[in-house]
Length: 267
Ligand SMILES: Nc1ncnc2c1ncn2[C@@H]1O[C@H](COP(=O)(O)OP(=O)(O)OP(=O)(O)O)[C@@H](O)[C@H]1O
Image (cartoon, rainbow, N blue to C red; front, side, top):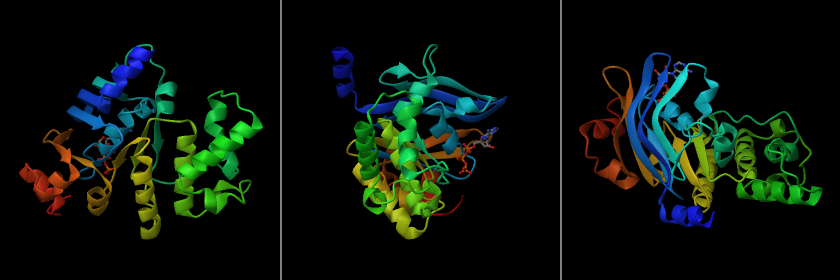
């Protein structure tokens, strides 16, 4: 156990995709992706509609398993282990690599129960006061505590859109993940709620690795450390064109296609 821990500390990457292709039936949606996601950083996945950003993201925690026709080839390493290897439990993968979706989707339950839900279904045996602490810590972690501490029994759906999205982030944090995948988490939010989520991402980065899919170039440029640009090839499979520090991708892209995309010439 100690050895694995020591090895992990020396590994700068949270997730590594090696020659990953993703199929839906016979259609190859993403091809030959090699991508190492650095720990405690925010990595943005950008590119035109249909280039496979969400497919890549969902492959990182086996969310695509829920699509019957989906199949992943290659390897996705997490702590040096392929998450698609036989015997790996996808439920455990999703606990350690959490996800926040485009549309805030709280359960029609109280704010408290939304956050307590994950630990409960994972079978964590916590006393009432331990659960109270975990709920508070998660809501604080999602920068929502001050706004909801007096109404924890109120329905999560009664919150504003931005608050609902932070509640979903709190729900993700409650099961103590290492990585948080965010699929266009701000696309349904107003600009102020969007900035709040971006500020929150910067805080979360201290303790978590964040990977975000965004259509919003300004968001990618101001709120991420690394950017990966994807584009569809002539066979319609998405491929990784360029990957690097966000400042380099936006100010000095190496590939002409990246330059054209970020300057708004297509997509
Ligand atoms: N469940 C599915 N079944 C079949 N094909 C799918 C499925 N999900 C995605 N695809 C196909 O895979 C390709 C990549 O889709 P994906 O949603 O990953 O792209 P994206 O870059 O995230 O697009 P967008 O920016 O529009 O959300 C598209 O051709 C899409 O039609």
